[in-house]
Image (cartoon, rainbow, N blue to C red):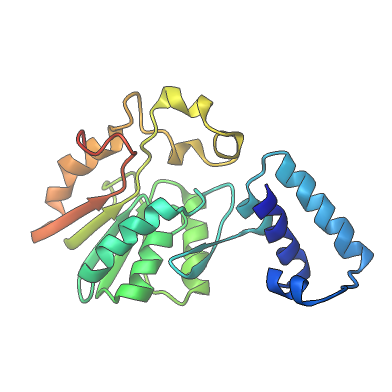
Length: 224
C-alpha cells in the first residue's frame, strides 16, 4: 500500500519521488490533492493500481490496461526474456494474447519476421490493437477460440493461457478475482485445460524444429 500511495502521488502530480525529497516544500493545487485522495480511496477498495492509472510497464514498454485484460506481470516477463533471443527473423504466434504485452514486446525487442496474436475476447483484442498502435508495433491480431481461426505455420508459439483451477479463483485476492477477467484466469477444474489444447494442436502449426513456450503456475511445470 505504501508503494501504491507513492505511485499514485507520482501519477497525479507528474513528479517522480526523488523530486519530493529534493524540494523543501511543494505547492500542490487543491484539485490535485482532492484527486489524489479520491484515487487512494479507489485503491483502498481493491481496484488494481493499474486500472486506476490505466497503464502498466512490461519489458520496459508501457501498456494500456483495463478490466478487459490481465494486468501484465513480472512472471510473464520471464517468458518473454526466455523467448527473445530466439525470435529474430522468425514467425511467431502469441496464443491468448490479452493486452498484447508479450507479442508487442517480442516485436519491439526481438525483431521477428512476422507475429500473429490470437485471443477469444474481442474486448481484449481491442486493447491489444491499441497497445500495438501506441508502441508502433506491427502485428496481426486474430479473434479466435484458441487455434480455430489461426492459419499459417510458425517457428515459435508462445502463450500465457488461463491456468488457475476453477475452485481456486474465489480464494484469490479481490484485485484479481473481482477486477480481472475470469475468462483470462480460469483454466478449468485442474488448471490444465488450455495446455491440453496447445499440446494437441500446436504440432499442426509448428514448422519443423519449432518450439512452444508457455507460462505455467508455480506447481504445474511437471504436469504441463
